[in-house]
Length: 176
Image (cartoon, rainbow, N blue to C red; front, side, top):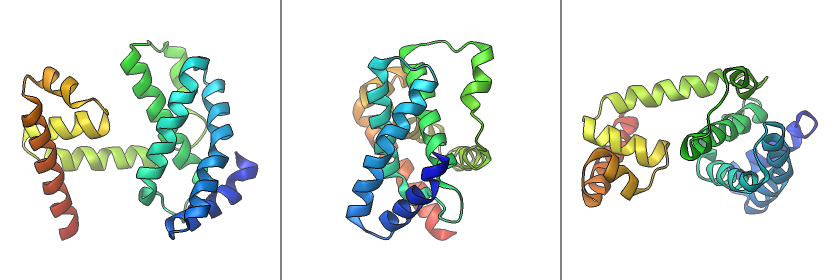
C-alpha cells in the first residue's frame, strides 16, 4: 500500500470534501488492497469478502474520523485489523499467542489505541445499561437480539438505551 499511499490519501481527502466520484474511486481502490491484507493474515477465502465489505462500510461510515494530516494506511489497516479481530470473536476462532504480534502489524496504531481509550472514557460517563448497549451495538456490532439476550433485557430496552446513550454522548461532544 506504500506506493498507493499518496493516491489513496488524496482520494480520501477529496471524499471528505464531498466528492462522490472520489469516494467511489477510493472504495474501489481499497478492494484489492484489503483482499491482499486479509489473505496475508491467513483469513480463509470464505471470510475475506465479508471482512473487506465490513471494512469498506466502516471507512464509509467513519471517514470523518480520519485525520488528513496523518498517513492513510495505518488508519485503514487499524479498521481492517479491528474488523478481523471482531470476526475472530464472532466465529470463536482462537488466535495463537505467536500470531498476536503479526496481528499488531508493522504499522503504528497508537492513534487507534488512543481513540479506543477516548471511547472507553466517554462510555464510562454513561449509566451502565446505556454504556453496555452502545458498546455491544456500535462497537462490537452485535444485533439488538444478541445484545438483549446477553444483557437480559428486552430488544426495545436495548434500542432505547442505545438511543439515549448516543444522544448523551453527542451532547457531551458538542459542549467540548
